Image (cartoon, rainbow, N blue to C red; front, side, top):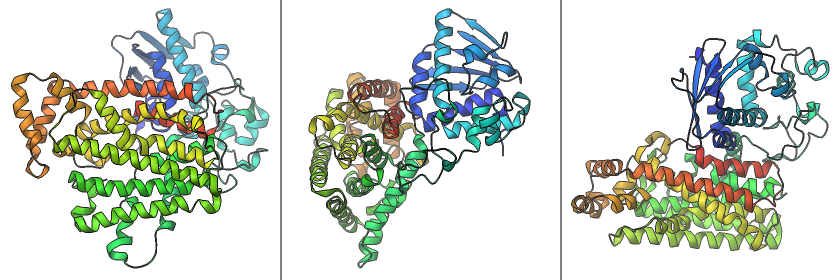
Length: 552
């Protein structure tokens, strides 16, 4: 059913912010940074109202009148006409009395900067243009009928929203120089670009230093291309039922595609051809799925991505062998790059892969040792080291380094530029995953609810709880924690969660993840400043910001 409120001014704002949080979180984070601490009330000529606030690096839109705004803005139809116009500066084109703004000078200017960022950077996203195009068709009185791309491009004054008209009909062949290597896939563009840089219609900010990318669409493409490569790598021979068919199970469960996207984007960022990184991305995913099969056995997990774990469905023996088979296939995939990438780059991939695997098994040993010996680390730093080793390297740091190697970068000083930024981002990402296991929807998270508490995992929340809870609570919590996984009940897990909520452990972890992600983003911009702005770097930037904007 169509949401009729979506085509009000307030509904359009809500859908636009949601689309940006999903597809270009760096834009949301940049705007949120300008508006921290400001409550913005917006009023539209159609009678709708909205309240815009900031929570961490999220923009929060409520379709309701703001009771006590710091800044208040009323848009008339003429102002709405100019919000996403690529041709004209709002400061020079907004007519007298089109906007009614109330608020202190400082907060009004901060709000203006936030909306300038949104309009300048979000307007290049096709998904946002399509959203506003739908709004336009529902409210033709603001712009008049569409004139079509050709008329918009040539006639100019005949169109009331020239940039959107141009984009609507744009095809790669229409624009000289548009035939170029795609981010993923063939040698030329076969569909409109994910992003339109606006240069063909002479926008007023020709030299925009920051690039943006549609993260969700890019991740879908990279994930699909990598999955296709994994399927090609899977042997088609016996024993199928007891090995090779089972090896296809976890990869077919469709994760987010974070590792393939980082690998392919890092290759593109350093000037490599994206297709040169696809096999390495597939190898990483094979390693990842092999690790997951073995992790699920060690953790005694019952579900993975909404389905029974391998050992629950097929037994421990077959599951161990499937994990071994996935890891063996991953090694073979890395070595097979010798045919296409040559000796130097393949040796670089082997070196990076070995380091990644070593870090992962060391991190797993640390975590399993804490559980085996009933140890809860007293400080967060121990968790930072463990999570970086166990998941940070193979989820964030190594994919970037491996992608750069695929582009021909083997200088350790250059590769090391990824380490600190994505170490911080990786820790923040893992903390958020731990939070989602406790308070997220199981269907979205993909693992059993409260599974980390049943497994006794030493998360930031548990470490904080042991630091802050009073002594009289400690014996009871320790007794629950010391029970084996098979001895714990859902009621035990809920009791642990209740204690964490009571002592502010989840709120503490949320704030910590946000702070670490912000530090990681700062290091990203500083350490990778040497990488020129391009589509690959834009994708890396969006992933860095994805951690700060994903819903918890």
